Length: 186
Image (tube, rainbow, N blue to C red; front, side):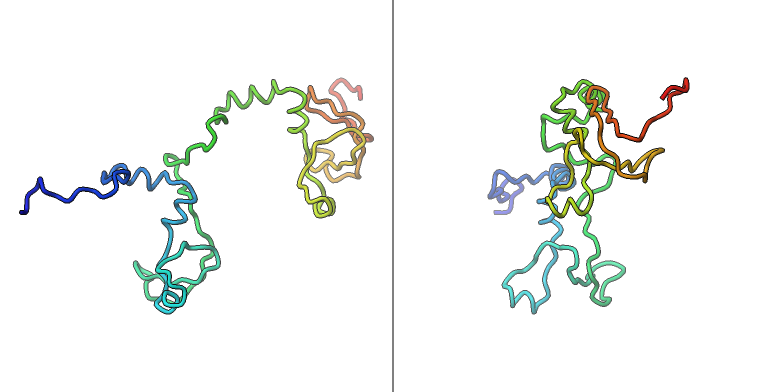
């Protein structure tokens, strides 16, 4: 009997049929779900070879456009695969609820940070040779380290030795590099 009341019910209670909710989940989906959404069907030869209908698109894959203005053209290579929507309104939510994105709170925590956290904040990147040797990108600065200034007025000068690490002011003192004060004193 065909009746508007006798429609077939959903098999899975967890899946919604609301268009609004489906669109919301689609556009706010995390990256690992977007990877699945952005999958493409394989050609008939590859489908029979691997026994898979479609796979997620990756960089350097070869693909052919089958819909739209560019359909039917030669096979092209995927240069870049954007999974995130770059929109002012559709930003992805924070993953960690304990981390804030408030500028006011971030500044407060930065300037009221204790010494052991300031040590971590005052870390500097290593040179390319040391990076390959120790397999570490950056380490906290301490006294007697050799460093080079790469930003500001004194950048590109010779390598200097750290004389003092002033954590309460977020300052390090390097030998042979002195800033002239406004009143003329060094």
